[in-house]
Length: 173
Ligand SMILES: Cc1cc2nc3c(=O)[nH]c(=O)nc-3n(C[C@H](O)[C@H](O)[C@H](O)COP(=O)(O)O)c2cc1C
Image 1 (cartoon, rainbow, N blue to C red):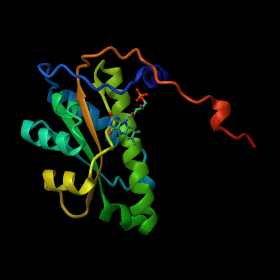
Image 2: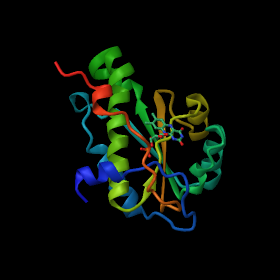
Image 3: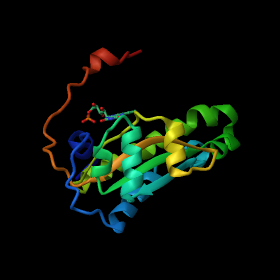
Image 4: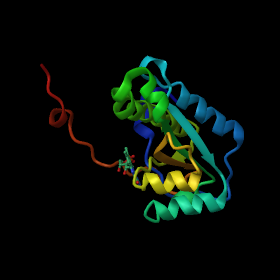
């Protein structure tokens, strides 16, 4: 699958075949894609929590406004940023801005490789960061940015949400 095909085929998937596991090799490939993303000064502030444990997934899903597809997925990867690492190179710009840009780039890489593998995922951002950090027992300097449930899709991915037109969102100068 070429890049543009993966970009256009990618959809948010919210139903997974819970009985179809995702093996470690696949998780590793997804993580390799994540850490291949660009980062400010190659600072790589990201950190990834790979969650397979059912009770942890249940707590995360419940806390994320009962988005229970998070626990239906055989694996959920919580993408975090290490705020200390982010701040080291670029001060507050690194801590407040680059940390988010870097993790977002890593997440999109993950979603694209997931799509290319015929799997499904969803970028989940609606959760309380403090609660998630507590559930995962994260160090104080780790900020959880997004949860990415990954699994074999149990729903067709043919619904394409309407996008604004280029002319609505672009200014050419
Ligand atoms: C920052 C961010 C946060 C999101 N949070 C959630 C979420 O908490 N739950 C959810 O079901 N989808 C979430 N999504 C997925 C969006 O709803 C989805 O990308 C959008 O509706 C477009 O659909 P598509 O991904 O299939 O193109 C989030 C996406 C982004 C980028």
